[in-house]
Amino acid sequence: MTDFWLNGEKIVWEGDPAIRVIDLLREKLGRTGTKEGCGTGECGACAIHVNGELHLSCLMLAGQLQGCRVTTIEGMAPAGGIHPLQQAFLDSGAVQCGFCIPGMVMAGAALRAKVPDPSERQIREGLSGNLCRCTGYGKIIQAVRSLSLSGSAAEEGNP
Ligand code: FES
Ligand code: FES
Image 1: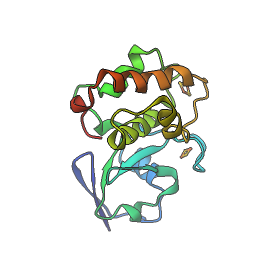
Image 2: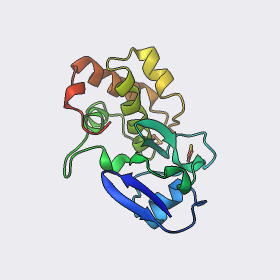
Image 3: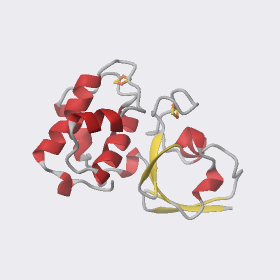
């Protein structure tokens, strides 16, 4: 049995502890906001936060979540709302097909939790593990940077 907190909700997983976390989230718990791209740790689409740190859910097993605090894209904004980073992505025209965006938001939020006002270089490094097949990197960087420049870190929700 694996107990953990998912977006503030207590989860008791009584199934296979060796199931991948991405499969647990999407197929067992219905949290489909987290995407699977490569499945091998190379694209960042499956990024989540575990105890406040960025992790790739395709490389984690359910049993590793025991006692952990997990945040997915669904838990980033208050109910019915939108996370400031998501708004910045929209405002910057950074969303094309949208597949990579949940992972980008999770990576961007993890970066900003450590570096509240990151430089462009720090943003590029912070998002270097996230691939966008629509090649919209310029606007994605711009989106994270614009939020930094607006100084709205205090308005952010669950990092
Ligand atoms: S699906 Fe996990 S890194 Fe690509
Ligand atoms: S917006 Fe399409 S993969 Fe990034």
